[in-house]
Image 1 (tube, rainbow, N blue to C red):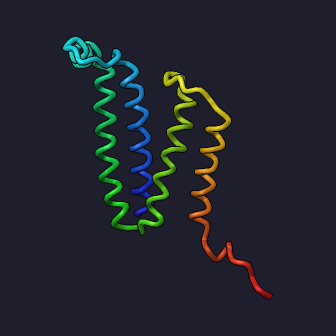
Image 2 (image 1 turned 180 degrees about the vertical axis):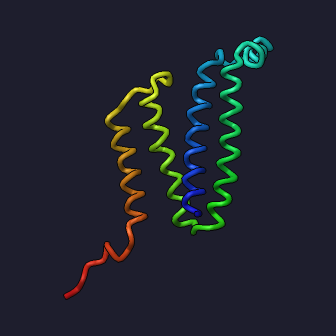
Image 3 (image 1 turned 135 degrees about the vertical axis):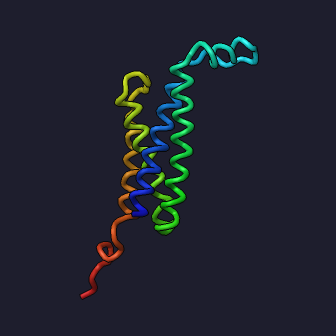
Length: 132
């Protein structure tokens, strides 16, 4: 059950990142003028809603993370957070409204993260060499 909570946390935090990225793309460039605050609060409801949904997803991900940490060892739980890097990168490339460019170098980096996760979760007995 702990891994399920960890997966929910990763999915929620990934969704939060994507929602907040889209939200800030909807807002005008930030300034210290009152017109900026007015534009954010009153003229861009979809962006503001996405921002609040992202913040709510972050809060819910923390609840799931708390429940995950109560059930699985930190040495197994913490590497799972790296899965959000993979998910956010893949979604940002796949979703056209985020305008994220594809890069081979980033693919290699994300692939390295994924291979690292596999190495952490492969049972130790399958990595040992039998001595004859």
